[in-house]
Image (cartoon, rainbow, N blue to C red; front, side, top):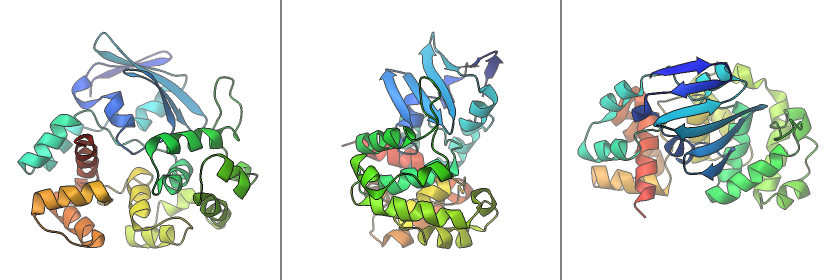
Length: 274
């Protein structure tokens, strides 16, 4: 991808593999604010960036250019990935539709909290709840940092309910305390089977949420989260219905090591057809 760092901004010239709406609105992240078409504020940990399309170039304005080069995965060749996973006409249509998707390099803590909030929820409400959780973090002037694990301990079940978490409030409260028992960075060294087993031990984490955390938090691209939309995709492609675990396993076998990327293009595309 052709990009350039210029003081406090990253200029992206190659927009065939980068589209900020595709990236932020494909269901992988909930810590952003849409200002206008192709103009977004993005929050990650204690970092902030504004991303805007200007004269057919994307300008990422931030004091943390190195962080956001990694966050947006700018050094990965998505052109090559798209060629590898374009195994059928259905997949080609999905790639053409969501051509600018990139899988973000997100904070593990934010991903775990975000996807517990996401269970049986809608995007607007998830984003709202995550913004209210951020308000418990350090005030950075014009935004709040995501709370540290220690600060998250100060949020009560009632607080989470008032933020719109609903029945997930109890799950968040319990999981935050369970996270004290591990070093999140060290869990990156777990093999995928062990890691998924551990994730499933967390309150509010079922198989689909666990696979989302594996893909979007740990970068395990051989994982394929299956929800209602992917069930429909599976039937479209394979002309049969299976249980979700079998669907996920078959999709990983079909798409290989880059299955997680395929999942995002397919999910974004199928959801758009409604």
